[in-house]
Length: 97
Image (cartoon, rainbow, N blue to C red; front, side):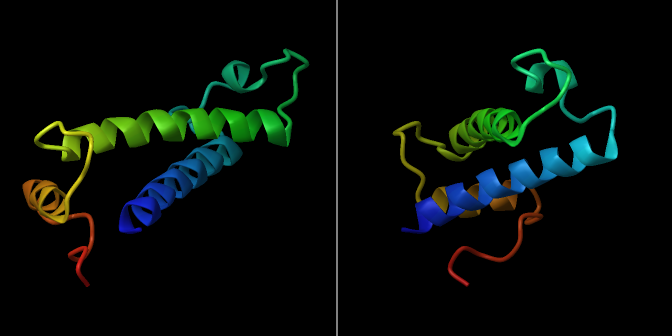
């Protein structure tokens, strides 16, 4: 159950980050043309949602792969804590808390 919440949190965070970058016009934000899939010069909610979900899925997969130290396709609490420790504990409190 915790794995689902972790994945959902990662997806939501990435989607919000991309949305803020898009709204503020930051250079490191998404490429407008990549979001405007029908090429009409405007991005619909459906296009934006699809774009952010694709990016979130790619990022979640990369993060998961980094945390899955033994490569078995599952992330244990020990692997999460080890990854957190390797990054200086920057990612918040222990998953047990």
